[in-house]
Length: 557
Image (cartoon, rainbow, N blue to C red; front, side):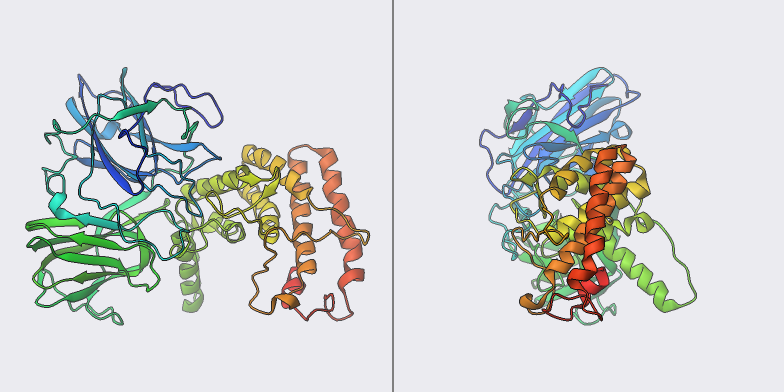
């Protein structure tokens, strides 16, 4: 087997990053192919694949990975790679490896753009190393238009919508597609070799801790309707549109999905696809070719329905969706009250749909790792997510720690181009409900040890005041997530509470790691806050500094 680099270790790779000679440009899709001959199927065959930004992998025409690649990065400048078992897809004789790579070419609030598109592929196939280099074939995919529909969220999400022209597809959607064996790629270009891993801008490649998405395959919608307010099924397929028609494909519940359509049409008709949400950030436009055809939009949506705006004169043969997810849901709750049973199910799925490249605040408008939200989700994953979800939490801890600023300041969302520190959210995550809760449930002492040094440095940014409490730090935004007047929020009390819980967690972390002196430091600050809290804030009835009767600091206290 080829030696797979580990996080932080020396990379010993022989494959090159490959791309077209140009660095990008933004929103570029490039198809790569490589055909190799095997005298026999090897006993083991694991491939390392890295890209900026996403990829789809086929071997011998069979889909191996749907939307591989993790949004960059594991730390500033570095890039993730996936380790994929490709043995089940190999045959004796000729084997065709095909990779479609999508380069976003912009930052988001959860992605750090490298500035260059690229593909890295290396696999040991029984002593024969297959590696990305100038022997591969490549072609900028002519079907994807660079000027795709833009998002409406101010650049917070990195992926674009999809604009695909079926008249420029590479082969049709059946056995003659470009990723199948036998496709004639002799006119394709030779990729440029950009250098082996370690070279900028991708730098060290680190193994993605999260397994590939669970691909549930193409599925029929629960119902098809032309009524946005009704899930009653009133569209029977095949269906020929006599006038411009909007069809809603209703899901059985909110999922992360890519939309799919099979149809018969003349060329040049535009089909618009997005979710039923007015604020959906991902839009798809498919322009038809002549005859039978199919299209799947690879930029995922979420919602309870996908909306297809279909012009007149098209025969719809199939409407489907592909559900992909981080692992699978786990855990059960049973009771005799249907209200609480439904509440459990809805809460579990809300968490599930907010997990992908990171745990996020919402799967629609931002998809960002707001670390206060992640702390809440961390309390729940142990009852509702399988191991993939727990590995995703480990990844969140890592990127939160490594994307610091000004030496010790922890901020989020991250990675990406949002760098404001919200101290209350950061304190919440370094505190009882964040990394300590992760360790308490997982026993992952290695992750605790790595995170601890960052958390201790961050907690040390607060100085103790003469009244025995902490000196308030506003950070970049002392927003307390309160709908009321900002001037009446008891921020000093709130921050002392979050800091106290951070000290409580820090003391437990130090004990677990055998850091006796640090335990005393955390405990002394806890004691100081505890012994002086009432004198500073208690008015005999509730906690206040005189600004307001605010329920939030009282609940925290």
